[in-house]
Structures are given as C-alpha cells and as structure tokens.
Length: 227
Image (cartoon, rainbow, N blue to C red):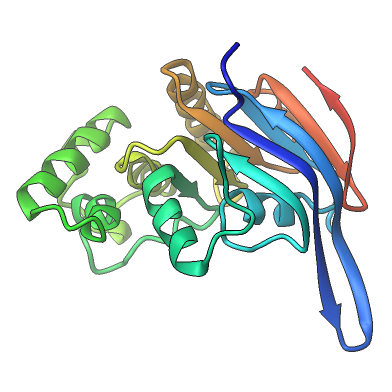
C-alpha cells in the first residue's frame, strides 16, 4: 500500500499573547493519500488556517510531528523549509497575489526563478501551465487586463509550474462570483483527476462538496470527517 502524502501525529500549535498561551491547534492526527482531494472546514478560530499554514511549511508546530512525501518536516530549519516549499508545494490564495506590473507568463514563471532555470525554460514551462488552465491567449496580459476568474487561473498555473507534490488552496473562490467560483472548482477537480493532491480550506459547503473528503475542525481539533 502506498505511503500517504501527508501524515500528522498529534500536531499542535500554540501562540503566546502576553501572559496567555492560546492553543490554535490541539493534537491533530490524520493522513491524506496521494491523489486525494480534501476540503478542510470549520468556523473562524477553529484551527483550519493554522493547519493549512503548517501543511504549507509557512509556520512550525509547537508539538507533534508532520511528514510530507515521507520526509519529516516538523523539525526542519527555515532554509530547508523554504527549499521544500519551492520544490514540493503549490499555493493558491483568495486574493490571487499576482505581481500587477508583470505579465501572466512572468507571474507563472516566477517560482522557477529561485531554481536557477534559464529564462527560456522558465517561460516554456509557464506557457505549458497557462495552456493547461485555458489561458494560452492571455499570456502577455497583466493582471488588471484579466477578469477575477482569469487571475485565479494564472495563480493556479503559478502554483503548478514547479510540479508540486501538493496543491494548497486557501478560500480560492472567496473573491469570485458564484459562476466563476464554480468554474475554478471544476478546474481544480479536473487537476485532481489528473493526479494532483489538493487540500482546500473553505467555509462554503457547496465548494467543499467538490472534494472527496471533508475534514471538520472545531476548537483546534478534528471533530468529524465525511465523504
């Protein structure tokens, strides 16, 4: 049986606010298989965003252990985490986070700059990913020349350009209208069917319904799962 892509054991995160210790995540143990599409839900303050930040190596746990692609990452240095993020993780955010004065092609190619690839190779890979999300005709456009849905497609192409093991999507439809949001979710579903593992954070039940499995958080703990 194949090893899970993600495995956490008693993962915890606490924040210090003055003299108070605030538990954001309390002993989360779970597995996510390769090729799975998982939605993480919960009310504000439930720990879902903290969990996403730990999975994305944007923060380090206060306790417990985390393995990504069979590598324990919960004890890595900041430099090692930065390399891991660039090599194995792709991120899609609610507000796109595109560079406004840069073309779609160069926005998508940006993560490859840190790998030291020549410009011709970076642009070829970026063009390939833009084609995959249906934007071959918009490669030279800047973000202001694109609709919200097109900007999110650029962001998804950027997340995929480094061929990551895991795609993390944090409220990817939150800034989009319902129809455009449905188009983006259909695209993510298609990418998942092509083999990409996706973990999605959302507070919308109709968005979570695109996933294979829904994990519900409350008070920093997993309280239920559904398929």
